[in-house]
Image (cartoon, rainbow, N blue to C red; front, side):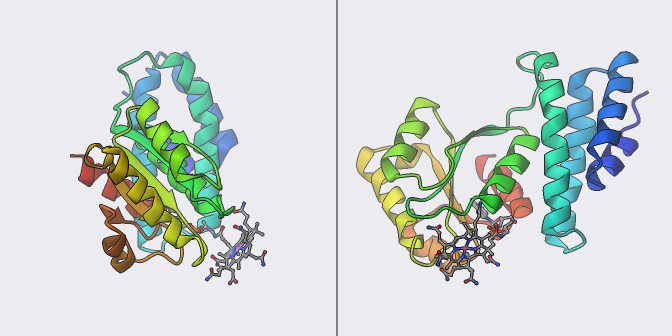
Length: 210
Ligand code: B1M
């Protein structure tokens, strides 16, 4: 029987070496990569998301856990046949044009990926046209926009306008986030939701795509 607890503990501790050892041993003992991913890592990330929301875990620890998980994902990816991973949805994410902050956005991307989303991370300083092209090309269900500056927040509205004008708006849920962004602002610009942190972004994304 697969015991997921050591994986969850090592993930919460951000201990990539321990996680790598546990993964190697489990694979050698015939545990499926899918089971390690779903029962160990994704469950662990769900717990971390809750801890983050409750302020039992803070950004540096969460970044460490996210990094550790990304490392193990690289090991598991080739072993996961198509259909093994619960694909929760396809998400395009990026920091809007004029804004170069990416730490929080990358954390959201990693946590979405860890929670079963296929994520297309466009990076920083992303134009509305680039968001639109990526959503079309990848048949995205969801768009996640990040802005850390009050001066770049209006760019989120420009992205939403571009989706409306192209006729794509009804096909893609749009979530926004970043330190200066609020629920009220999200409603004003016509976004489908706002998440104050990466943990709630995953929760919101899952509930909105259900
Ligand atoms: Co800048 N910066 N910065 N900065 N920077 C802030 C944002 C600022 C608040 C600092 C301050 O003055 N107190 C201020 C903005 C003021 C304002 O607009 N009101 C500021 C400024 C002014 C600037 C420059 C203009 C400074 C200058 O050059 N004069 C300049 C702008 C450059 C540009 O973008 N064009 C600038 C530059 C930089 C650095 C390059 C040096 C660096 C960024 C490095 C990088 O990202 N690779 C930087 C940093 C590090 C910061 C602070 C200190 C930290 C940001 C951060 O990474 N936080 C920041 C002050 C602060 O926020 N305390 C500041 C940690 C991160 C995990 O949190 O990004 O909030 P956060 O992400 C959270 C949530 O917001 C949410 O989830 C994340 C995880 O929980 N979230 C989402 C984020 N995106 C989401 C998307 C979603 C959902 C949730 O989609 C659905």
